[in-house]
Amino acid sequence: MSRILIVEDEQHLAQGLRFNLEAEGYEVQVVDTGEAALDALAASAFDVMVLDIMLPGKDGFSVITELRQAGNFVPTLMLTARSHSGDVLRGLAAGADDYLTKPFELAILTARIRGLLRRREWMRAAVADPKEVYEFSDRRVQFDQLELRAGERIFPLTVMEAKLLRRLVAHEGKPVSRKDLLQEVWGLHEDTDTRAIDNFIVRLRRYIEEDPTRPRHLLTVRGVGYRFVAEPGKKG
Image (cartoon, rainbow, N blue to C red; front, top):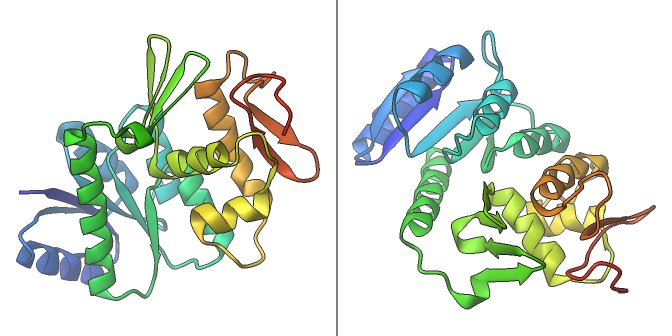
């Protein structure tokens, strides 16, 4: 039985989610503060977390940031009453795997949860398809398992980090604009501050580059966006 942690301070909504998810066969725990969420995750394992952004004390952004920094990669669906794309990107940049804006339909939320659970099972049981593996330098990316190996080090990737890297690799050697990345990876077509994507690039450089301050693979194309090269110095 899959375990779901709901972090929501609106009691009526939280209990409604609990009732419906338990009816679907899930084991559900509800907490109403960011601090309580961190305590619950430290005490036991969950398969999915549904995390509200606006919470008493630590907000959802703080919770997901602390979790990812601590190495906890529980699949997380963020709920937000803020539909502005900048808020969505902030949550994704912090390490959330998906988001849903309020108000939402229950059927959509349960479908998103099922998607996160399926992805988790694929990660656990996957036998790597050659198309899901990309190697360059001494790096090996396993997109199906959301994992990047650099020598002896292993870096877990969030879903969005993996999607962004896959997209840059697909355009290897060619500049890709920030706007195109926002549209292709996140499906955001509105007027968005494209600098929000820079947070993802900073994290990927920590995994990929020998010296993240002097990147050789994930290159900035000034005034445009980014270019990935497998071999340093390779021209597009």
